[in-house]
Amino acid sequence: EGFSLEHQIEVSSEPLSNFELPKLVYMVVSNKIELQVKFLKDYPEWQFLPDTDLERKSIEIFDDLKSAKKSCGKEQKVIKVPNTSVLKIVAPILVNRGISRIISKDKLLSL
Image (cartoon, rainbow, N blue to C red; front, side):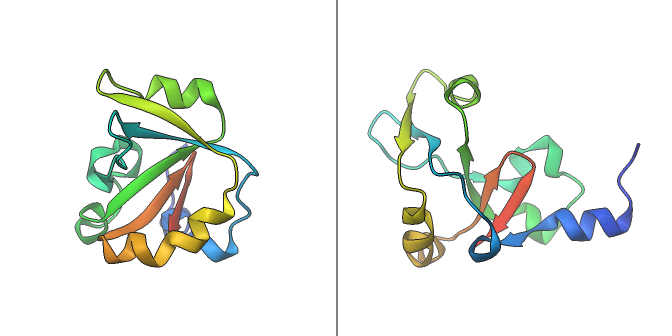
């Protein structure tokens, strides 16, 4: 079943403030504990988005350790974020660094 236009618009992004984050998430960071920032165009599952959106910087969160480890490279490690409200607190800082989206499973959250 393909994506309908309504589904694309509906799925494109949801404000982080409206999203109920899990109590605990995992993130992949560099060995120096720096955020691993990727463009949306780096994710095949978001290729249907307009080019302007594909140029947005994003970070990815995982709700289980196994899926986080699958996305972890040799120069990276997985960290646990035990209090996800910190993501809402640091959202303005992320936006100042040019990061405007958080990817969580099949959700695209806007900051």
